[in-house]
Image: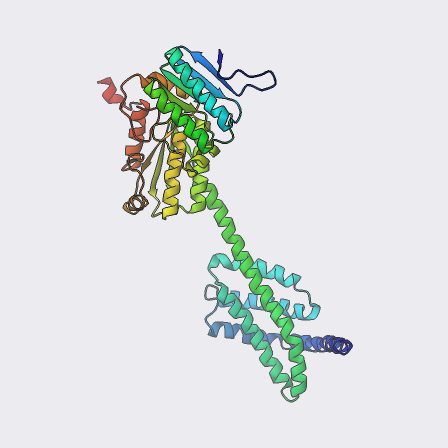
Length: 293
Length: 141
């Protein structure tokens, strides 16, 4: 145990002495290593969404950050930079595999340069690599991790804004609400729809609700069932529901799950649905010139 | 005003039943256990006969939960009331409760529901007129 610890300490000391050597080497060959890396990126057809100039300038920043991490041992700065970089390149369609590929290429380029430098002293090379590998791995994980985190953040943000937009409850006449639904109706959105609809019935004192699902491509059986339950729950609150714009796929799903068709009030399109609702509520819409005649 | 129950001084009033013309308006104030539900049912059905009521409104707006037995009781009231010549409307079911009830399999069949007392009265006023039942559209005949 004590011997192990001594060995560890010796290792740590060696890393301390070898890393500065390594850093000095990387500083010295900054220009050609950067160049080498950029051309390898180009050869591998990575980062095709960016111009060569852009690639080169990012390569320079990443390289300098990389050397700094080896020098200071702190990845904070790099993480910050990587997140910032991700924010810039994600909207341009850079993929995760490209970012990982690019970082691994740098690792490869630097390792080759170290082989080159220490090839006469195999033992020293081994020890240098011992010092270099863990640091390089940490860097690769940091950059790839930051990229993925940023991507997830963007996706979450988009989900949030979609959710906000997704289920408007609109009053078009007194006692008449419409809910136009556009896009995929998944389980979570269906729940939100129910909540908004039942709350809307209460606040607007609605008697009839028209749910238009023209813009919904298809639903699975669980969501179809949920939709039917929402219609029932609306009825318990004293409001009738008219569903319009049922695609043949959704209609088939409803038949498959065995919906009691007597309970469902469906009309072909939104216009027909609103007309039906107006009729039920006792509204009569007349064109002004017809009324005058 | 008639009370469905004869509350002892310690016991708070759980249900009140008012007569309004030919209608009975029952408000449930707190959750009822099964025995209380049965008594409520019997009292209400008794009153329908005595008052020759044409309509019954049951307001459940104060309830946090309507379990299957409570719902079954309400349905029984509606069915028996119809046989005795009165239509029943349940009003005031809250949004969250409505969906829970449906998930638990509440049957809607013969029940009429409305948003609140006003909606219930409006439906009863219409119920006497041309009655062509419209699927899924309570209160709109």
